[in-house]
Structures are given as structure tokens and as C-alpha cells.
Image (cartoon, rainbow over all chains, first blue to last red; front, side, top):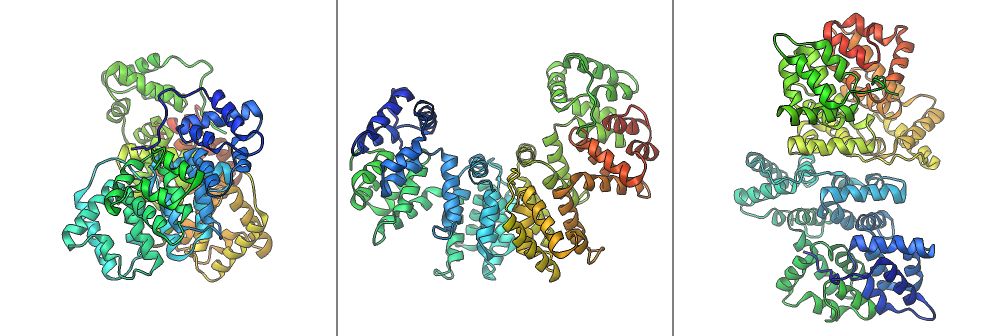
Length: 316
Length: 316
């Protein structure tokens, strides 16, 4: 469930554009007005605002936001204003660049979006970068990371609920064998995680737990310092319980010495319209403090206000 | 260019259905009438006929064709009548089954269809088999074949004309190094062939030819008996000059001791609406005999008539 709050009656896009234009006018910027508008419009409405803005003023709303705003607030507003699939394409592209490289972000986008949404991300990637997502991911990664990430971003998983229990049993056994052999990059292990439907993977991991007495992620913790193993555990989590994955990502981002604003922004902005309600619940349960209070305690100013608005609170 | 001939005025689908119904009625079947109708309707028209047939008679046209027809003619009509993406899903699925396994068919579908069409095939595969194409391909293949085929069927290649010449030069060098080392299954070689756009691959292979004096497929002929190398050469051909690939497939199918009807049918049926005109030209050039005569000499009866109609001739 989303946390985004859209007013019962939304003004026509022309009016929103006019207000945004006012917010940019003269010395200084009216950040509160920008939040009041953009942080309370859904993807389709924001798209319409961008189109109307371009048609009315002959300028790109994103460029104007870019020049009017700064730092973490700027990044949050820009990412939020983008279409979800364009935003994911942008984040994924950033994640393949040397200075902002992140196998995590690539994996997160590949594993937590629906098959159709991931397809739209790949199309948006073509349009924006004139290359394919898998092309850049495979070019910029190597070894085990490439072996895992390329099929993850290329997958078009079946999304039905059908589960083959025999298969789940036999593949649970394969996973267990490979893990016992410490063959964490084995073709078969990667095949199962990158091609099976999420329902089937869930069934397989339940069988794993039943047959071998441990959750698979416990057995994948042999070396907690190993980056590939850490990514593999996160992959399992994204595929089977994304809200827990996002809760942990928020927790680590907030608890860090010096907040990890990039991760915080990414999770809030990409999930506000999707599953943020569940993530908030998970967060509260796991940390004994509401997410809104945690974010308010760790951020400030317009950036704080923007994030809180997106998770459904006007104030902490 | 297509070879399919659609009449200037096409009867309404109701009339086509009525005629087909007549062709099935009583003892025996009017095969000529079936060819006259179905072999002269494009994909959208055939789809409409199937829908009208189901709505009017409460029966599936494909099932009726299946029970009325037999052997090679039956297979050709059934495959032809399917929607192109459904047909490819069907052929790809067959190609993952033990008795009809074919790495070639999988590669051919993955490499000669447009990115969007391959996406539609993958969607049709979900709908029909409740699994994903890459899931079945990776489950039913192993080793080097899997390593090549899974990314091929999962790709959503960029389709623009943009070419990066620097990249083409450097990747030509990588390909040459790997081939010199006989590392035909090397990650980098597979990455380049499975993720780059067809335009980019073409540029890279031109650079290869310029820098090293041989076409890559000549250098990939080290061991003509090696099945993986043969598949790799066919992959290169499908990506860069599909009409030559199809010409060769037809040539081998026809020149075999005992025609390879499966291959012959597959190429004619899948290409009649796409690129058959070019393939016919290539065939004539390479074999000094028109394709129509070659097919007429090697096939007979309704099967022959069906194939000839699809390649644009009513008789040899």
C-alpha cells in the first residue's frame, strides 16, 4: 500500500504549473509550495504536470527544479517527479557508473519491481541512454557479480501463483548441495534464483527450510564480510519479502554515522506509491520507533518535509 | 519484404469462417480451400478469423484444423495460423523438450526477431506455459549452450543505429584475443554477442575483419564438428545477416537425404510475412535455382501447395 496522499480534488495541471512557476519566481524559491504540489500528485498526475509545463512555458520542469533547488532536497524532488520507469532507469544507470557504482541498486530494481515494470524500465533505458540496461550492467560488472546481475536485470519472470512442489523440493536440494560445497556462484544456484517465478522461489525456500532446518539466508552467512554473499542474501530477501529488505535498507541508512541520504531518498521515493505502508509497519516493529520519527530525527529542512510528505505525514 | 499475397479485397472474417467450415464438412477435407483462405491472410486477419470462428461455432479453429489435417501439411497450417508471437513461443517450447530439443531454434528465435517481438514471445510463453522462456531454456540446457542461450533469449537489445567506433575497435580486439585463446565460451565474448545492439555488433565485426584480416566466422571454424562453435557461428550470422542464415537453413533442409520438413516449414512459416523475399533472392543466388523450384522438387501434395502459396507462388 502506498503512503502518498493525493487530495480529494486535484487542481487541473495548468493550475499546478502556474503555482510551480510562482514558486520559482523572483529571489528565493517557495519550497513549501513545491512540496505541497508535487509530493501530493501520483505518477500519472506528475506526468501531466510535466507535459503541461513544457507545452505552456516551453521549458522542462525537471531542469527548472534542478536550477531552483539544491542538495538532498533537490535530488528527492527530481527523482520523485520522474516517471517511475524513467526514475529506475536513471538510478540503474547511475549504479553502473564508476563513482556511483552500486550492485545493490541494480539488484534492488531488478528484484523488487514487477516483470512488466522491469520491462518498462528497460524500454526507458533504451530511450534515455541509447543502450540496453543489460548491456551496461554486463559491461560494468565482472565475475560473480556479473553472473548474478545480468540475468536478474534481463528476467521477465512468470508472475502466476502456480507452484510445482516436486520441483521446489528438488531445487531446494540443489541449493543446499551448492551451499554446502560453498559453490555460491554455481550455475544451478544462479539459474534458480534468476529465472523461477517469485512464488516458485518462495516454495523452494520453504522446502529448504523444512528439509534442512535453516532459512537459506542463515546458510548464506558463512562469511559475513563477503560482498557477493551479502548481495546474494539481499537478492533472496528482495525476491521473497521486499518490505523487510527495504526496512533494513532504511534502518542502515538512518543508523549510519552520517545518514546515507542516497539510500534513504531512493527507498522513500521509489516506494511511496507502491508499498511504503507495509515498510513503515515493518520499520516500526523492528526498531520500536515509527519511521516518521526516525526520519525526522535524522534529516532537516525541506528535505525532511519532502520525505515526511511522501511517507504520508505533514509533520513528525 | 514479405512474400505473403493477400487479395486486394479480403472477404469479411464471417465469410472466411463459413468457407473453412465447408472445407471441413462431410467426408474428406477441401485442402485447396483451406490454403486459398488461410495462406492468403495476414496475421491480423488470421487472428480475426480465429476469434470469429470461436464466437460463431463455439470451437477452436486450431483444434478443427488439427483433426481435419495430417502430417507435414497439418503442421504447416497450424503453425501458420497461430499468431507470430504465439507461434514462436510454441516453437521455442518444443525446442526445450527432450525429443524435439533444438538449441538452433531457440537461438534463431532469440536473434532474428526484433526486441519488441521477442518481448511479445516471452509474454506469450508466460500465457501459454505458465513459466518464463528463460526459465525453461536454462532448465533444459547446460554448460556452454546455456551460457549462450539464456542471455540471448533474455535480451532486449537497443535497436538504434548509433555506433560507437572506439568501442567497436576495442571489442573486436577482445573477441580476437578470446578466439586466439580458443576461449569460445569466455564471459566477454558472450557479453558482447548477447548484449550489444545489432548495429554495434555489426560495426565490431567489421573492425574485426579490418584489423585481423578474416571474417570472425572463419576464425570460429577451428573445429567444424564442434556443436557449440557451429551454434556460435549461426548466432553471428543471425545477428548480422539473417537472410543468409535462413537461406542456409533452407538449403540444408532441402538438400538433406530426406527433406528436413520441420526446418523447411519453420523458415517458410515464420518468414513469409517478414523477410521471405530477400531469403528467396539469397537462395536463388547461392543455389542457382529458384527456391520455388527447389521446394516443389522436394515436397508434394497439399504440403507443397501450402509452402508455395506462402512464398508467393500458386504453382512451381
